[in-house]
Length: 377
Ligand SMILES: Cc1cc2nc3c(=O)[nH]c(=O)nc-3n(C[C@H](O)[C@H](O)[C@H](O)COP(=O)(O)OP(=O)(O)OC[C@H]3O[C@@H](n4cnc5c(N)ncnc54)[C@H](O)[C@@H]3O)c2cc1C
Image 1 (spheres, helix red, strand yellow):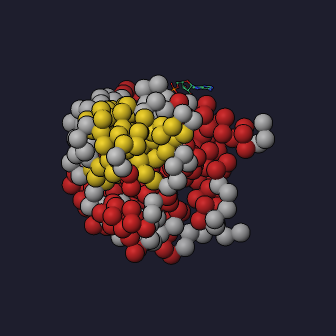
Image 2: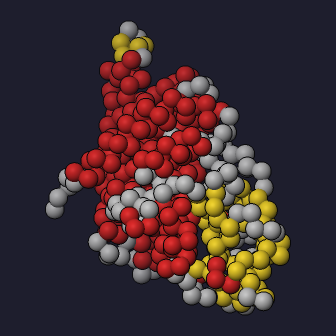
């Protein structure tokens, strides 16, 4: 067993760490306060090749593996969750269905602009009446004169409405008991995108409600085989969970870094609070949980890279890191005392950004359902 990262993994970690520290950290608070989408950072990340890490170079991607991708997402989240989710939703959710299920023609049409980061992609599964029960999709697509005519709505869709978004991959009912995937390009008549939704956290990320009214796209915009859409989207979610789990580790690491530094600097009763055993024990627990969570994330990413089954481990990693990041950021804020509760403290932003990690891409309860199914229950 080899627990060392390869030179390539070390390189991506150092590159993204430096980018996050030098370019993201100075503006993170302002972007959050103004709920402003980070266009400049997205352009810089495209330059660095961070918006298509796991896609082959022939399509404009980075040709990296899942471990590299998880490391990049972890390092970004350590500093700013909004920037990290923009990359993760674009890569694992928006672009991946086109890479995995698209025809060669669809790949040639979409991947070069998406994997290079010139444009962004979104993934539209959730509907007002279909969240955890994602198979309850009500949106319909009817084939008329060689066009799919889409009617329905989606909610909470990341990256759907930015100025650089190219398309959304959606699920729609194409028959009574049949769900298929379709690519809907932004700007298609009948496809309306709401104003950005206001949120507790991830404030600089783009979250929208979508509506489709007689929105017609070419018959060729179906992704993969007709009727296989639900199974395809479950596969996409399995992979996406690795990146959300990497976000849990990154957020917890960022919170730990802040708490560690603060505990050594803040003095009460005439000495640094880090000298009190109660604080040391908290930091020791935080470091231990982060180490365990990171091991689960890397293992699920490694399994995927080996072409082996990884869905169980990805769900475990997502569940465990969602919950550990909750505990760690709570302890980190506690160590900051009243200063941590103030809006201008970085740890308060991390605290708000954490909660969604237990909801998005399957709630904690849904992860337990997935794990139980894999246990044969
Ligand atoms: C900021 C943000 C970004 C998002 N981005 C996207 C995106 O890009 N694309 C996309 O498609 N979706 C996206 N989502 C949607 C997200 O995946 C859903 O919110 C999530 O799957 C939960 O669905 P729901 O909100 O409808 O909750 P519900 O399914 O209504 O769940 C409510 C509660 O009931 C529990 N529950 C439900 N069913 C069961 C059960 N059988 N047993 C036990 N408990 C149960 C849940 O765990 C939860 O605690 C995003 C959400 C947010 C908030």
